[in-house]
Structure formats: structure tokens, C-alpha cells
Length: 260
Image (tube, rainbow, N blue to C red; front, side, top):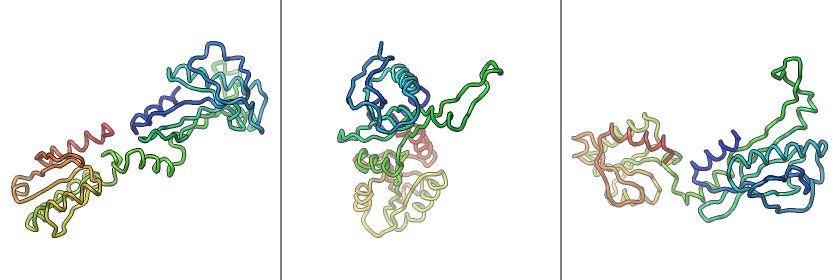
């Protein structure tokens, strides 16, 4: 249950919806009695090559089925698609376009502990127990997960994950020194920030920053330089607000902490 809770926590942060499947060995389950939200999707039996005896597989399948039931989420049986060393729970995510990708997986392995003759002392120290190995992948392939996230967010990364969290746009050359100071303060606070010191008009700078998908566009002129403030524009909104640097950094901290 701990791993399923971890997967649910991570995928909720990413904004994914997902489906659960129990990939098993056989299509006749003594433990089927009382299962909920369970649908068989394959009928081709156990994997062609597998380790161990079928009784051990059934024990592992029953344990995973119990964990899925306790999760309270709907799930399906995917017969014959278990790993060669044991059954597994596969998690398929849906991106913003409702396309499905198999990413996370949770697998029970009764075979390696047996092959390595592993054991541990139970509550009764005179009794030795055989451990069960859990293989779990939350993201799957990191590279593929990033590709899925790119499409899921359509290039508009949330602030906490964005490689372009903020950009400072000085109105004129006179306000460039203050813009660089603001950039340095934000960078020292641990955020990704750029500064546009080109000679383009401020309207062009803001537009280019929006197209580049910066989460926050910070416009500074002589007035902001004199008061120690910044004019904050949000990526997809036309309005803006004026903040002190202290309030801005506090706001960035709260946004990152909330995974926004």
C-alpha cells in the first residue's frame, strides 16, 4: 500500500489520471472471491517463461489484489502479462490528450530471495522467514516521462518544474542595473531566472517572454528601481501586479511548495 500511495501522490502532483492493472500468471484464481472492480482483459494464461511454482504466484497475486482493493480505485486483471519472476501492478497514465502510456510498475518477486537463500528473524527469533522483494518504478524511464510531461503540459510547465520560471524585462537602459540586481536576488533564492537586456521595446520583450513560456515576467522601470519593487505579469494573463522583492520571493516559495 505504501508504494501505491507514493505513486498516487506523485501522479496527482503531475496532474495525471491513471489506470491500474494486475498482470498475472494464470486465468484461474482461487482468490477471486470478493474482488471488486475487477475485469479480465486477457485469456492467454501464464507468461511463456516464468520462475517458481504456480502456488507461489497465486500467493503473490492475492497479495497484490488485496493491496489494489485497499486502494479503493478500480482496476483490471491483465492475464498472462506478469514478469517472468512474479506478478505485477502496471500503471497507465493519460496525458492532456487522453493518450495512455504505461509508466509506473510495482512487482512482487518471491524468486530472488529464494535463489539467494535470504532470510530474516521474525518476532520469534528462533524462526527464520523468507523476505519478499518489491521492485517498484514510479516514473519508469525518466527520459520518456519527461517527453510525456512535455506533451501533457503542452510546453507550459508548472512553476515548480519549469526551466523558465521568471524573466526580468527592464523598460529602458536606465533600469538595466536594477534588473540585473533583481535577477541576482531571485537566482540566489534558488529559482531559474533570466534577464532581457536587449534594446527592444518593452512590449516586444513581454511578448517574446510569453512565447518562450516564462511563468512570470517581471517588468522593471525607473519607478520600480526607486521603490525596490517589480511589476509581475503571469504567462497567460494580461493583468499585472506590483510586488516588493520580499513578497515576490515569498510568493515563489509558496508556489513551489504547493507544486503549482
